[in-house]
Image (cartoon, rainbow, N blue to C red; front, side, top):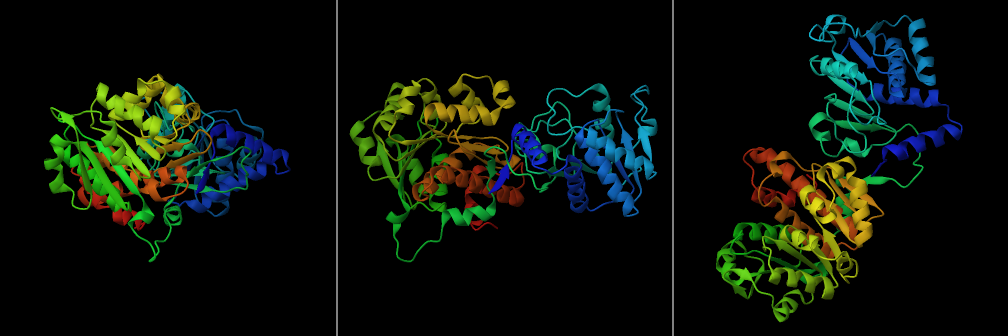
Length: 501
């Protein structure tokens, strides 16, 4: 897994490296060298600089480009410099590298000398990862000019205007390539990041984390975590899992099938599908390899029967609960029973999360089960009582806090997925727009129910499930397109995702 540092951790790590004897100017040149080696340059090059160390990286980069004989101009938004930035700026001036000032007094509709359309590559060195809030008017104008340039755009460390911790922005540079410096930050993956970065790479400049990092799970991790299946094994070696969902109102026979088939494709030994008896005949034709457990219902809605539930979950390693099950006293009673009596890994999704949001957190905290919650942001808002805006401003912190307070593993869905047990954080950046379709969450629950049944470490199991789900979705989108794909297409690509193709 790749280390990911919060903005504060990166700041402290940078300061610790400098206090440990590595001059800031040397780190700045290492950053510039890393950017230089990461880009397929298309001259001439414009480097647009702000006032901090991010601008200093740009000045150092200009020196490297100039040394290689590449035409390069510096566009200056500010006459203020960091100490190390001034050192490289003055070297640029002494080398005769052209410096052009953005004219803040011009008509905003007249780009004038700020026109960047004649450049092959534009480098964004305006704002670094320490930025948060709203961009100033002059910076906003510079961002517009960069985005309208038609050039190949490279953002150094992070796209100017994008929050390094949250991946949110009112306005930001849209890059062809973003070159992270030192370590990736959460903002390179979360929320808006995929929409404003076509690609993102990191250059290591020798900074060690001051505090414990987050981690990004990669395809190389998947086979290691899933392990190699032995010939001397059987279905019991890979776990029995139970899926409990469905109702007349939210029949979702196909969605239950998605879930069951996703679990089987993800390596479960045996999948038992518990659903209201009313739905059983609709679901059976879609599920060939799973076992159907019809449960007592009343007009298609589940009735709590403790003996039936205990029979269903007996000897299972995982239970996934809540998908389309509806909100009633009976379904609440089923969830309370699972929380009190089940000791395996309990995955709660969809209606199960709504039911859970009305329960005392002590019931969750005291559960003998390893409780795994899979909310999207609106569901997480209901669970925590926090507003969606507040969660978006600190998604990792909010997820960690709730997981810590409840003793759960939280999988917070989004363009990138946050997985945390309140101590460690793993990010999966797989996934695509085509997964914004009914049934995608059910597929994820099926994958998680399977993987959590045979992977020993629960946090790694959940992160692996998130990765497989997102990668299968990406493969489905490649085949069917973002507009036309459905959740069943993701299921059909699970095998390829696990093979890491």
